[in-house]
Image (cartoon, rainbow, N blue to C red; front, side, top):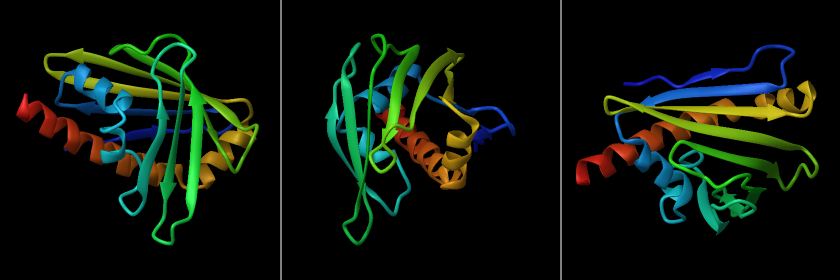
Length: 160
């Protein structure tokens, strides 16, 4: 099983996530950019995800809402910068309950010999914003999402 590495160095306004997948990068790209695939992997399993908007093009917007078992919604949104490709996606990310706390995600997919390395570099305006993100339990959600993404792209690769 592949491990998800999450690095959040003290004093640096950044979180880096790295994971390898035994799948072509095109499948990972599709999982990130197709509205019917995103809810199958993104977020902890105890939450339900609804894709409200997903327009993966330069200047396009995305928005989704996670719902807990009590029906409470947690909405996130952002903008794409540059046209997303199977090599790279650049997007902003903002939680509706923390307006103005915006961070930038650069997600790269590097494929070699049937293995794709996903690297997500998340940059924050301040170390305090990054610390809040880490303190709010992002690592648990990231690890759960990466496990679910691995299962999804593995199934997709087997079906191809």
